[in-house]
Length: 614
Image 1 (cartoon, helix red, strand yellow):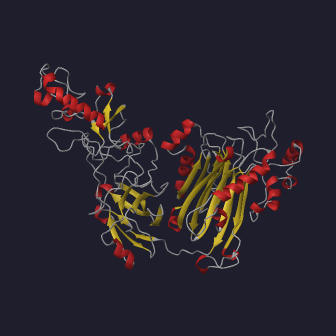
Image 2: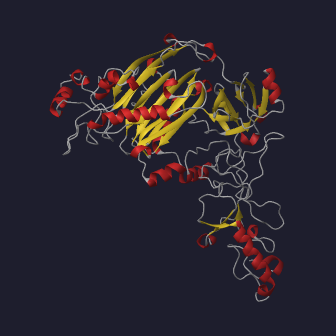
Image 3: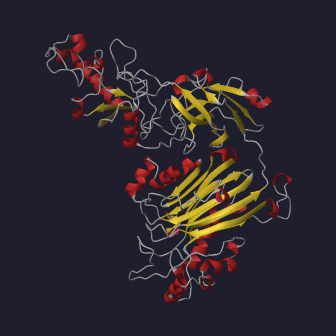
């Protein structure tokens, strides 16, 4: 397990963090999990609004760097500028269960989240592990405040379930972050002399955290490796020189990584289990700072741990079976077997992922894990079977992985080994009026970049070859979207005729609730709340002589760059329609023709049947 802590000082992410994550150190240090704790990520109001819609830049950076090494984001939690990300190799995902997060504010007496702690806890092969990232109060004289805040975090953070309700109830705790402990008594000149002379051991006994570990009961049992690297605070930004400003802050080891193994209890634990230190052991392989990163006044710190324990989970909750290669659509059959005691949900699904996927929602397509005999298969430990539709399959060649996503545990409960998909690409280009087909790769990619790269939709949406990555509009129920006047001249409608409607229709684009696409005989689509509000509504427009317009089933990718939109409440618009309808007889007698749409010519000579309308 690799653990990293870094106070980034509101800086933008660097171009490369490969060395920080120790990704090129060889097989001996090939990590299975990586926990990254950040502090002072830019959390000004404009950045927080942007991060609320899209993934923050730091998380994007780490996912981009780690996904080629087969790391997948397991969980993340953010409290203002404090972020914690936990990654694991994809083949470990089924054995990482009971994932929960929590956060505790301690700034301004507990009302502000600039200081405090965030945590991710999970069961790793049956052992309860907690990662706790903290940002404690600054300044030399605030040591007692740091002690009180840490005790508050330990007391306030509680998790569901009987296995480990508090942080210190876990079998293993990693505590790290900008803990802000300083060096007492010694003069700044002596501290700098000791650093330059590489006699760091003379500073250890005056380090506040080293003193506290032997005097504070709350820190009993926490361990830390030797501080064989220079103090990580405070540097002039952009350099490796300690603070040269007028304040001339004394260098200190503010950024730390500690761990604690749960002490064995006197009696047997839950289920009659008697804990023992021999069951779980931790050895630190590396503990160092990284001087090459200069974007902040702190240096990042990394540690690598070898954690040994007896596995309590030999098989995943769900075993997924698939052929070595799919050459034809009819081969896209998935079989799966659920372990006894697995909590199956009707919202479980099986995702198709490219090798190197970033997080559990980064699927190419999905199918609901709903077979007619699902309950019987669970009871009798039989294989259930589902099939991907042809339109859901990616075209061309590539390596893919199947993963069973459990809605109950909000995690992947089973994965396959990588397998090949080799399907011929479609030779026929999609018609500009056919929005049900996939748009060109060029149009799709440009739209994704401009709208919202790397969608983090919390549940699978409408199945398409590519998912919509635009910010959600699904929560605005009952809205009419009408192009503004400046967009009417450059209408994206394929032809003027397609925008004509029957008498009384408003030529607008409606966003009604979509009829669910069924992947099984009785499979409903999840509600917008269950889908996390991902933009999966159907765009429809009234059209004369056709039950469904060419814009049906369109999504923002097919519309290219979205025009400026004016939003109106549906009931207001319908009221206007009714009022216009009552006046139509008197009004339309004074006109020989009317414009039906932004693309209709102003001087038309159409009949009343086709030309009349608001």
